[in-house]
Length: 59
Image 1: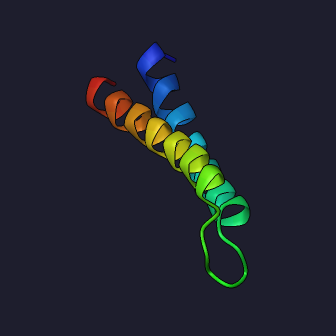
Image 2: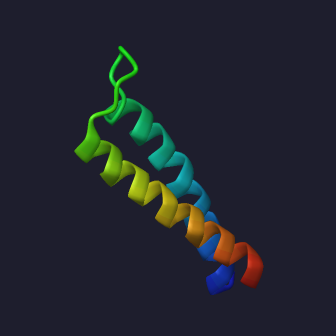
């Protein structure tokens, strides 16, 4: 398995995991955002999404 293939897998799993984390931690049952948690989980989500895309392009 190449480095870029590992980046694809890690990026995808991290992206999906952070999406669930964002929904569970940053959104209240009343559908309101908790700003600091939304920034944290949203930033991680974007970072893993970017890793996934870069891995797909280079794999």
